[in-house]
Image (cartoon, rainbow, N blue to C red; front, side, top):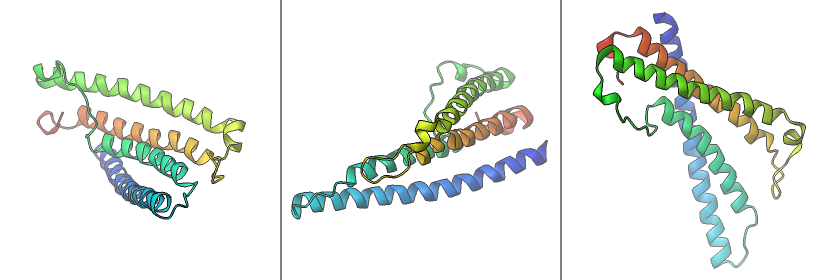
Length: 169
């Protein structure tokens, strides 16, 4: 089981690094595009029609990929109303149950995101201004949420198989 956990950790760390680079590039591109749009609109009196559409599409990429990065790094906001009152095995059990419920929701999004992606209407849609296939963005839903599911499974396995004192809850 140790080897499986190590393999999952290596895969997850590599995927997070790649995703962070992509998110950083998307944020930089979004800033430049919006800045160029402002310059062209207000200073050159020649608005660029594609700026808003591209900024919105980049925001979608940033949101889905950022969700995976935040989940993998343990940076997603969560409310620990009463889990902090517990210690030891009961605290670990509550965390595992919580992660299992999150995993159930993530798998639900993966299944229905895949169904949305495979719809003929989704496969044929294009953005109105730039004619970018929307299937790219629909396909991002099951891919990123599958990665989120894998990160959640890895976290559950760590809760179950790591020593009690080494598990950070």
